[in-house]
Structures are given as structure tokens and as C-alpha cells.
Amino acid sequence: MSNQAVTLTVVANMTSNYSDGLGNAASVQKVYKNQKEYAMRSRESLKNAICVQAGLYDDLETSLDKVMQKKVNEELNAANCRALEGGYMSTEGLTYVRNSSFYLTDAIAVDSFINELRFHNNLYLASTHAKKNNLSVQNNAGDTGLMPYQYEYDKSMKVYSLTIDLEKVGVDENFHTEADNAEKAARVNAILNAVENLSLVVKGNLDNAEPLFVIGGMSARKTHYFENVVKVKGNSLVLEEGIKDKLNSNKGNFKAGVLKCGAFTNEAEIVRELHAESTETFFEELRKEVTEYYA
Image (cartoon, one colour):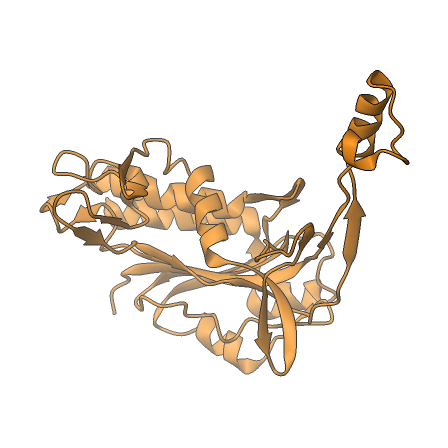
């Protein structure tokens, strides 16, 4: 079977993003499974961060047609505009729709959620205003603009998957245009660079969301091939037969990588059982394979 996709499943340490709040209280996004709730970072949040850090949005142009949307026309399409690689729907004039060439899952925590509330205020700003205006923060809180607020906080190990359709990259069937192979390879490798060095920001928290563990590679199947076999229990990567069988299958050229930092209690076993290399080597070799695929 010929390889037609790149698929990765990643374990990373990251914060969650937020759902609707009530007043000055904000709640992290959660998903419910096995009668428990798990904190998550949405695939939309992940995709936006990856697109920004990969430089895919450097050439983004927008248009307003009742709602703000990506600008698309015969001269500006997915073949010559990287910002459209993640898909678009344009309703300006004729309606054009192009699905993304790459898909992500939500990043879901490996452990169930334990509520951790953080309480904050803008006391320093309010106190500065109070001093200048001869007010008392205690007695004139409203006049000083004192604003207490709280939010749930979660930073934990989470698992997500990414799959890139190599045959769709740089192709825009709406306008019968296609990028050259060098551009296609550059786009895919930019996405891989972003995943390898991912940083996330939410409510003033800056995360180094680089992969602690990654598995995947060039795949004959356009799906999240390892999504169902990567599990973490008690800071230990579960090394059942399923993950080993998929790693050694003939449905792609798959490898594993681990960041040797002690994040997993069974780090040595991961290296031994999965022949895991460093995450840096994993991504370096995968980028070479992508370049060769499009050569």
C-alpha cells in the first residue's frame, strides 16, 4: 500500500481552553466519558495555534459578507495562499467550500478533572486609581474599578491526534489549481515544525506544549491510526499489544519518539519496547520523508 498521509498521536502537557463563563467565573472545557469529566483543549484551539505558529496565516486575507471569513477567489485560493490550507467556506458572490487537508482531535486529559479554582483581582490598578483620586478601595470599591474574578485551572497531560492528507495539500478543486511539490512539502513540514515546538497561551498562561511522546509517520490510511491505542495511566504509557501491533504494521512507515525528561515513569521501557528515538530525531526524519514523498 502506498503512503498517502501523515498521522501522529501526541501526548503533551498543556492547559485547557475555556467554555462559556458566568459573570466573572470561567470554566475550562470538558468532555464526559466513563461517567467522569475530563478537561480538554478543543481541536479548534489547537488548529488555530498550529496554523499561526506554522506561518500558514501569514498571508491570510479576510472579507466581510455578513460574517467575517477568509477571502477566496480565482486569484487567491488554496494553491497560492497558505492560509486556505486549513479549509474555507466563502459566501462572497458564489459559495465555495474546501475542506481542510489536515484534521485534529480534541486534546483530552489522561486523568479525570479535579476542580482547581484560581481567584484574582486588579487590586494594584484599583489602588493606584484610589490614591490619585483620594478614594478608599475598601469603602469605594465600585468607584475604584476593583474587579475580582475567578476561573478553573487545568494543566495536565493530554492526548491528541493529527492527520494530514498528502494528496489534498495545495490542491483547490474549486478553481482547478494546484501548488507545486516544493510548496506542498513546505506546508506539511511547517505544520510538523509547529507540532514539534508548539506553544499555547490562555488566560496569561504560556504552555510549552511540545510532545512528551509521539507515535506515527507516513501512512497508507488517511485516519488517526494510533488514536485508540495511546493511553496513559498514572504517568505511565500503557504498552499493550495494540500499540505494538500498529507500530509494526505494514500500513505505513511508523516510529515512536519520546522526550527523555522523566515525564513517564516507564520511560526506559518505552524506549526498549517501542524502539523510541528522541522527539527531535522523530520529527527530523519525518520531515525528510515528506520532502522525499513530494520530490
